[in-house]
Image (cartoon, rainbow, N blue to C red; front, side, top):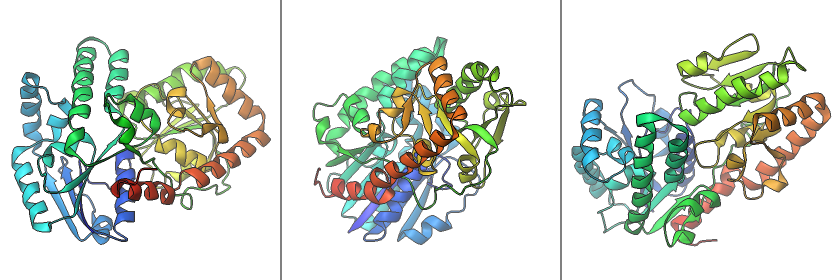
Length: 389
C-alpha cells in the first residue's frame, strides 16, 4: 500500500514525544508499505534527515515562513480555527502538499495531530486517518486553569476552539487514533468510541538497566522548554525537594533534557543538576534511583514514564499522568498529587533499596508485556485497517 504521512515537524532528532511516536510508526509502516513522508518545518537550521530518508520512498520538507506566523495568529483572532492550527497553516504550502500527494497517488493519508488536518481534509478521494494523539482541548483547559492574565484568557479561548475543532474535523477522516482511553473520553465527539486507541511505545531493547553507578537519587527528564515539563521541574525542586532535605541533606536531583528554559536553568544548585541536551538520555535513567514526574498539566501517555519503567526505575507521578495507563495496577506506578505525597513515596524508596530494585523490575516487565513499539504498532495496523479491537 502507498501511504502519505504528514507531520507538523521533522521527526528527528527524537527529543519530543510527538517526534518519537511518529518516527517509530514510520519505521514500522515502511517495512510493508511505500511511504511518502511530508514534514512541515519552521526551523531554519539544517537537520540531518538521512535516517528518515533511508526509511521512506519519498521525503519532502515543506518550509513554513516564520515571519508570516505572527500575521496568521493575528488574523486568527477574527475566525474560529484553533491558534495552533493557524500557526502551521500556510496557503501556498497547502497547494504544494496537494501537488505532492496527487503525484504520489497514495492509497491512504496518515496525518499526525490536528495541526496538519487542514492540509488534506478536502481530499475526499483518498482514505485518511487522523492521529489526534492527545486530547489537546483538555490540555488547553488545564493551561487555562494555571495561567494568569492575558495568557489565561488566551488558553480559555483556545480550549473552546480546539474542542469544537476536534469534533468538526472528525468527519473528514475515515479512521482515527488517540494515545489513551483517558484522552479519548475527553474528546467532545459523540462517536468517540470509534476512535482507535494506539498507545505510545518504548524500545525495550534500547532502554534497559545497564547497572551503572547511581549518581543521582531522583531524575526527571523531557523537553525542558515545554511548559508542562517546566512546571513539573519547578514543582520537583521548589515544592518536593525542601521536604526531603532535612532527612537527606546530600540528596541529588537530575533535571535532564533538551532546551532547558531559563526558569529550569535557574533551578540548578548544589543538590540539583540541570543537564541540558544529553547525547544518550539513557544515562539519565541508568544513573538514577527514582523517576519523579509531577505532571499536573499536559495530556497523553508520557514517553518519559515508559522509558523510565523500561530502564527498571520505580516511578512516582500524578494521577493525571498515571490515568493514561489503564493496566497501571500491574505496574509499580506510584501516584502522588501533593508535595507531601511525593516526598513520602520518595522517602520510602530512598530508605529501601531492595524495594527500589524490585519495583523497578516489575515496571520493566509491565512495559515489555504492554507497551513495546511492536505491540503499539499492531494496534496502528488495526486502526488503518478499520479493525477495531
